[in-house]
Length: 336
Image 1: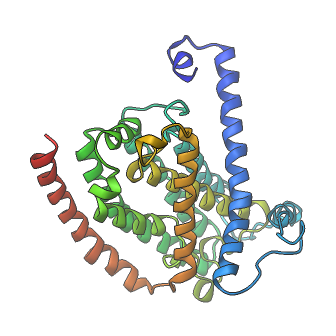
Image 2 (image 1 turned 90 degrees about the vertical axis):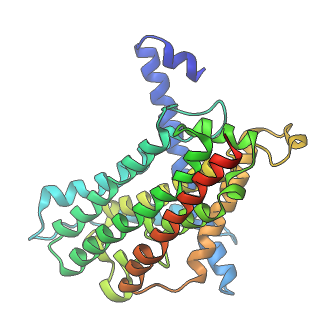
Image 3 (image 1 turned 180 degrees about the horizontal axis):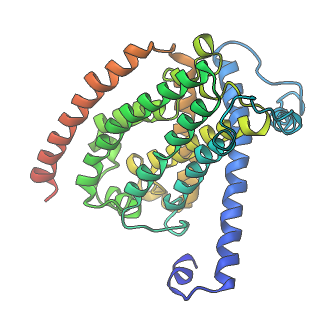
């Protein structure tokens, strides 16, 4: 259906179909954000030996996140008197919009993808980098020393860790011979999942992903103990919610991209399990990646700023370069 729409001439029917599908995806992502936050709180509670949310919405706290959203909607939206008002207002939108745009290229199954772009991986990396502009703009526009420090930290961290993030997937591109995400999944069906062929690249990708998401142990831009809340310290209500929404939508997108690049996407682990729908396999792998990201947040303490930068430039970058070198040798020897 999607392919026939893409090759047909533009019309209002096409517009409304794509608009409806995009709205459905947005609602699905918002549902993930709502209950992903609840799942994170529950998993953190379990790992820390406490209950987690257990009051609103029954013993499982199923409506706790819904109540939090309603609270944010009802909170007063304040703007600091000395803030750069236009930039202050638009910064949360700049931070959130790319998080949703990158989902267009993610192939959730072999038949469900919004945009089958030949350079889908490059599109994802390029668009996701725009969020840095929104974060820095929020830090600058708030006219607060803590927010400015948080914005500068975010810029330094995202730029530093985007380099090894990009370099970690070059091995995948070499082995697959394409930047197209569908072809990368297909290449894993012909050989092995790239987590087996690219274990070092996978490890670098996961670490850099956590840094790009600004999650513990790389949550320096919003370190509560040092910067109160960092770049969004002056934000409240729904504008603050936009920053949180961007973080969890990126969690959804990054877990999906990890599944596609290293875990075979919608492909089953063994051929005899092929009768199970691809969407089920994608959801299972995706859930495992999200759980691991939550696990990392619960386990590790926050790094110091100097440790974070040294680790990115002095450890991840050289290892990523070495991984590209050995990937090229592997490609030449075994995958001609």
